[in-house]
Length: 266
Length: 353
Image 1 (cartoon, rainbow over the protein chains, first blue to last red):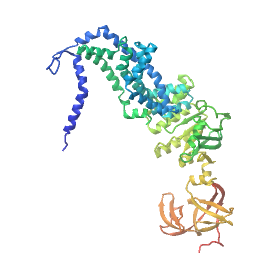
Image 2: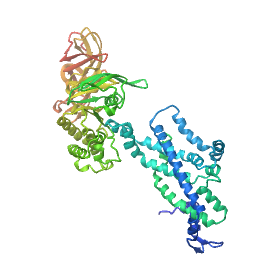
Image 3: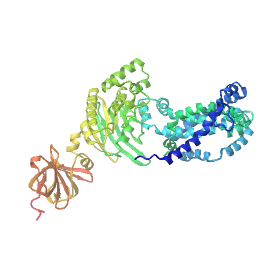
Image 4: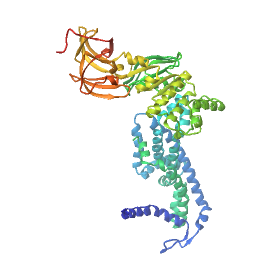
């Protein structure tokens, strides 16, 4: 006799509901025109708030700002972090492990406290309230993904692959561009997506450095939620969430415990 | 063709290769043979330029290559792990070296086709490395090197990850290809049989040193050091003391024209023969291997002996037999003292009671 693990299923169901429930609610809200207590589902459906939202400039500007900010911050972080990750993976230099661990140490500091001290410096440099100031501070959110995952990826490439190309006459640059980079590309893309999404939703830095002149999407979301027009916030949420979710799904296979552990040099 | 002159290499103070010198002739296949950690792979990497030598020099066709980087040397290496690039097709892998050299596309395609034909994979150009078997992958790795027409082909245990049967057939293929192309080749292996079958000459290495450089048969019949004697093929080793031209061999005194002192007397299992004047030993095990029979024996002193003989000559287990050596290799301090043919028993002194 096979016993159905009723208890297990119950726990699983509760957990799934707890995780998916809030997202489901947001999606429902985005398509709800009227949804009042005590109804379990919206009583009137429609895309009313979608059309209302998308035409408004106060909405469009932060979205564009966010996309520009995030693209620039992520790309800049990639330019700095990927070569660093290559160095961590391939070169042996004193303090290598210490530096790798310092990236975790930075994670252990409350971000807000870190940003306050950065804000003090930025104030003197005139970067507070500027687009570039926000871009600079948001790059910090990317460092973790941009170092760990690429380091693991570069480490995972057998040195013989590079040596074989070098041995056949290729220059160091050619080896890197035609062998190392294509081999690491899927993981690099994954790190880019993860960093992109985490910067897109970054709030602390944007709030402290950017507000009120630079309004990003999450900041807009906060202000919309405060105005108690639930549907508008929900529409924006869904709008951001769907593409991000699809992107994240593509990076799933790099988010393994092994991949991250390799970044640490395990 | 290829001159290796007193090459040394140490890693963090630990010597890996110590003052190795030898010269390889054009079209010759030389095996670097030795146990793992003997420095043979390091030496190969030094020849390729992937590892720098600490001292010594390397010349290829007279040109000094010691300081040249790997990408400037006329060598090409086949790696144990085949090291094919998974993001390129077989044809792209093979054509890489030609693209680096800036050859026109049509010429690359033609040369890649020809070399894939040579290794019997002409139908596989569009495949990805992941779609190949182990043997096919290693053939592609070989083709990738052959296509750039290296002056010296280097192979680092290329077949050791493959199963025994495949290994043998690839060995045959490589040998005939190498002969046909008259390709100077250095082949690293820890597999004696592989080295003996492939090589024109073998460099036996131990603890970073070149022990002996000779043709396979010569290594077997005339080992010049104790290390080679014990590494190549089987040997019965008897440690004894020579005094006044006599030495005790497994309880039987023999007349040996050797200087006094400690000596190791080594004898191949097939170089033993039954003789009433010989050393006495009891048969502990008889193994019929097919072509020969292997007889394990124990002397009165507890020393173990191995004798290989024709099946008809094999004794029964527990039988007491007396054996004499047809040929002895005598070593002192690891170096050859003498090779003694048909030693005679010393009849006057030391006859066992």
